[in-house]
Structure formats: structure tokens, C-alpha cells
Amino acid sequence: MVSTSSATADQLSAGSLPPGVLDDVHKRLARIEGQIRGVRRLLDEGAGCKDVLHQVAAVNAAFDRVGYKLVAAAMEHCVANPDSPMTTEELEGLFLKLS
Image (tube, rainbow, N blue to C red):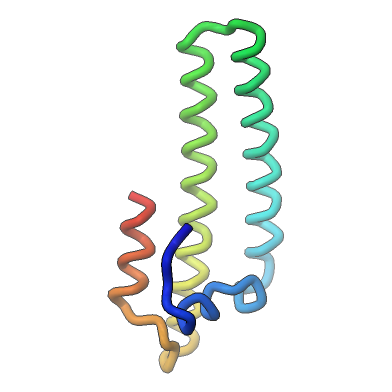
């Protein structure tokens, strides 16, 4: 979880996300849940490490994309609202947490 100040946390609330972003994030998270169930199934079935790790990498990549989507939404909000309490340094910090 990203640690933020209260003003910054308000910036990243679901209510302030651009239209469509929240739905997209929910869809991505639902897909990730399915991928995780698939990883568990592979483990339960005794699949090879290569297959399991390939799926774990896919889950990681999908989860990274969720984070990037949220950071992009925060950046979009800050550009549209120049008097936003989120600083450039805070945005950079959020982006770097994902790398």
C-alpha cells in the first residue's frame, strides 16, 4: 500500500478517478484473481516450476499495470487541476514505488 498524506490520499480516492479508470482497475483485478487461482491450481496439480513461474510473472505484470494505471490517473488529475495538493515529488515517488 502506498503511504500518502491525507491530502494526497484524497487525490487518489476512487471518487476522483477519471471516468472509466475505476471500472478498468476492477476488471484488471478480477483477471488477476483468476490468474492467482490458476497458479494455485498449477501448484496443487504438481506442475513444473517453469509453468508456475511463467504464470507468477504474468500476475506480477498484470498487477504492475494496475499500479501504472492508478499513477497515470493521478498524473492526469494533477494536470487537469494545477492547484492540486499532490506535488511532482509525490507523483514521482508513487511511480518509483512501482519500479
